[in-house]
Image (cartoon, rainbow, N blue to C red):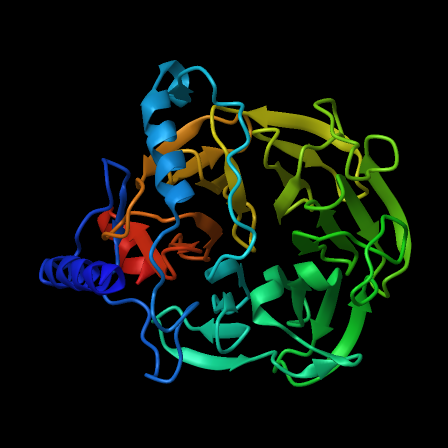
Length: 379
């Protein structure tokens, strides 16, 4: 009965939202939600076919976040009350979308804990490809274990199987296995092992950066062929090696790359973004009152902005990279239009459209700029 009520509520909200074209996202953000995006064949879906009821701890944590505040303060930064530093974690087995990536053609790659591990949509919302469910090195890719992924500069697709402690590289059509980082079903923190890896980025020269964050606390740099180059972390970067200093981590989660190949790496429970150059040398940090889970920068990377998926109050922030100033914010906890239910993935395309994905919400939403020129270009 509870699931039925949730489904009926979602249907009513969807009908009301669809009846008003160009409905705006929560707040005066400068972005609007694109209705009925994306479209899929009936046989495919995000997460579970029947949306599960939200777990009790989800609602309790959302109430605690709301109680802590979130009013905008001077300088455009988000202000929150006492206790923001507490870890806002939850169940490890979550349905829905675990991550997003984008390629040079503005196609959106959805890393889906559902029937197809990878689903690819064009900017119009049409499904153009799905797959990554084959057996590799004696083990079939398990979508329940996915966490995120990336598309490199040659169009190859990288898939993180978090709980199998490995990352696999597939050809652009998802049909050929090319490379593996980590050892299947073996955890560790040396050159050939991960422990629950969380994020990946690929530089223009082909070098690979991995956030090895749920079991370890380190970020690792590999060459294009998978040879270990270096890592940054406190001590050995193991599970107990948490720190707040430069190059130290309290759950390195995901990352984005700008035009100069600078790395903007989410330190999730450190509530900050640490910035490194392409050789994994520390530059600076961006600190705010948030619980960032993902960061998106366009593949062009020259705009000077990023978008943050913020779990603290289930919102999206537009961030100015040079000084960390928040330029726009929208969203709140919920499953209605423009709301988020554990927002866990975010990317931005070459036209400025922003795509944000939920785990518990089991959906992908597209937002475009509300200015006339920006809206026309981002459709």
